[in-house]
Image (cartoon, helix red, strand yellow):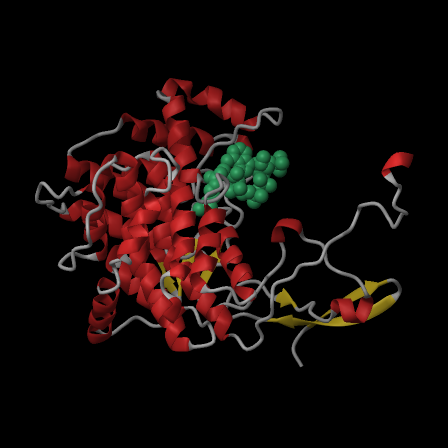
Amino acid sequence: MGDQAKLSVGGKEIDLPVLKGSVGPDVIDIRKLYAQTGAFTYDPGFTSTGSCESALTYIDGDEGVLLHRGYPIGQLAEQSSFLEVCYLLLNGELPSQAELGKFEHTITRHTMVHEQLSSFFSGFRRDAHPMAVMCGVVGALSAFYHDSTDISDPVQRRIASHRLIAKMPTIAAMAYKYSVGQPFVYPDNKLSYAGNFLKMTFGVPAEEYEVIPAVEKAMDRIFILHADHEQNASTSTVRLAGSSGANPFACIAAGIACLWGPAHGGANEACLNMLREIGTPDKIPHFIERAKDKNDPFRLMGFGHRVYKNYDPRATVMQQTVREVFDALKVNDPLFETALRLEELARSDPYFIEKKLFPNVDFYSGIILSAIGFPTEMFTVLFALARTVGWVAQWNEMIGDPGQKIGRPRQLYTGPTERDYVPLSAR
Ligand code: ACO
């Protein structure tokens, strides 16, 4: 028998199994706690709760480590490609040359969307936030691809996963094109995943579009850096939605809705807006003081993380990529200097040191995306595009788990106890 934890509740002592993962903290298995004691655990925000078993992604927040299927994010960002990382996340192992070629071919052949889906866009206001459009259009996919919504069929699950990964750039680019009043650009099968997305976003039918290799590489790397991040809020949302048996398109739409919040994927947009508000480095101390003031709701966006209590390894790669994109495009956004100085000042400030607040993935990503030409409203859309593979891989893992149950948390009830209804005339 493995390790046991002892818990004493109301004078009764029970043993709880302690489960060991391949690496990382042990977990105390409380599944029988309620049956044995009549008590629930209480953990709002899931700060100490493991919600599932997963073999996809591992994070050591104290050491600043992020592994996908065991491979460090820095190595993947440097040496792999986004579609190879997608294959890895979905299948567990890196592909052979032939497997990668077949996978790339499959994804490329799923990039078009049903022509009728285009008419959805005109139902939205042109000034709608593209994340609002994404929630609606991705949710609508289940009305178009009925042949891949039977979640009990592994083949349909795979096809739905491929469709989502392949169509997300097309839908994201369409959301952008609609907002600027330009015609939609069809996918181009000759191009890479990132190159095709750039063309669909920035190309116009009247001209040839030339993909700049350094920008294409940066785009691909940004997708890799956002591919998965274990049980974060949006991924947990996808799993919870999927636990009821909802179809994958509906589940991913739920994930997109959750990602939109400024405490999660919306932070990249909020961070660039904050840097613009700060403007020049001389204003930084004022904003740092505001971030430290408990009576001021302002927080340094792109700083802090629930899991990382060290430098987010994705922020390291992101910072390097800023320079590469600036060199390739021959631009130099002064906000980068402001961001570097802000990082330097915050990291030498006792408040941020004590609370272990470091730059996260969102701190530098907005500067790169802005240099490439994306408006801030598109930043979270790009995050959703890249995170789709993580969501579908986690969803597939959950559906394939024989121990999977509908997610149904309990609560600590603090409302009124039972009382009699008082007729309106007597109130
Ligand atoms: N600026 C100033 N203070 C902060 C910041 C920040 N960015 N982040 C956390 N703190 C402080 C909190 O005020 C709190 O102080 P207290 O203990 O005195 O009350 C302490 O640090 C812990 O913060 P919590 O909010 O309790 O930590 P939690 O794990 O719940 O939140 C979160 C993590 C939401 C990421 C938070 O750090 C934050 O709001 N950061 C800014 C938004 C952001 O960048 N989000 C992107 C996260 S990465 C991603 O989703 C891709």
